[in-house]
Image 1 (cartoon, rainbow, N blue to C red):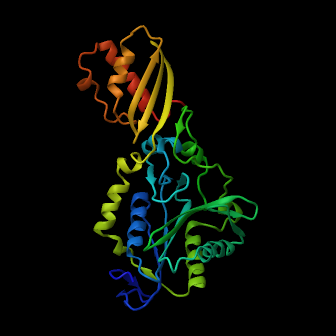
Image 2 (cartoon, rainbow, N blue to C red):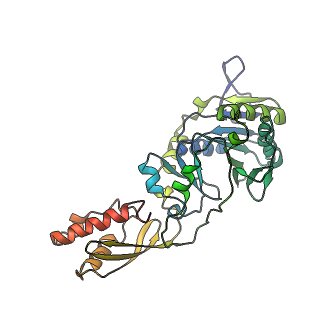
Amino acid sequence: MIAPFFVLNYNGENTKRRADIMSNYFIQTYTWNPWHNLAVEKYLSTQIKKGDVIFYLWQNERTVVIGRNQNAIRECRAQLLEEEGGCLARRTTGGGAVYHDLGNLCFTFLASPEAYNLEKQLKVIQKACLKFGVETHFSGRNDIITKDGFKFSGNAFSNTSQCSIQHGTLMIDVDVSQLGRYLTPSKDKMKAKGVKSVQSRVCNLKDLNPEVTTDAMRRALMESFEELYGCFEELDPRMLDTPQVKETYDLYSSWEWKFGKSPECETSYSKRFDWGELEVYLKLNAMHISEIMVFSDMLDVELPGLIERLLLGKRYDMADVNLEEELPSCSGEQKEKLREVIKWLADPLRND
């Protein structure tokens, strides 16, 4: 069992769990930070013992979550997202990029391998939807769709010798206009070696029944979980304040985890400035510029070489570029042009 956990009993009292009972557990968080929520999921997976099943509900605010092996810059406008107060998160499971806001409800089933039952877990979701009159079925590799074929839930999976995981999303009242703003790839001419998300027809459950809200769906899921799994114990969220969660949060929120895991790719940009046209070809490795070629019709024949020297080895978002330190001997006019180039390349909407 999950020895150190505290359980909320029906009298509202904290009780230590008996170590000789194999039980079902439920927990939900009300923090909207994706790095925290994914860190909690990771922590719960390390606490699973034989026979355990945990059902975990959580939400993220203005977040793009990419798959374990995806290329961040191929799948979303990460810099724009972060500049507008959103978060980029990379999960440990595969699959494509998804957009989360508070109109979306995330769920995770964590179970020991002998207790993991995908069909039963999917029925929890389906029964909850049916409480609102929405008929659903599982489709393809990882989608839950309506009877009319509209996707409202994507799922991903992972398995270890200790814990098997199914997690997914439920689109309840998502601002779908933001999907195109953050998920639509830019016009960069890019060849990526990562997984490319598949475009799907999607819908919000609230469009099918106005009574569906995230709070109502939380209650419906709890009821369905109990109907299919029997009695469960609700875990106290205070148990999540652990060094392990903090350590994983620090990892998941780091630039290296979010971008450094991106596969090698090639991209190119072009722009006409007042002083000439510029074409920049970049090869990226772990989101750093490993190769660069600059072409231009400008009169200053030295500037393309200066751009290459300045940017080689730097981060893709230009955050570590220091013009004054690295090219101190440039003329004032050259520095002004270089600043224009850096500002352009750092702009997440550079080609929009």
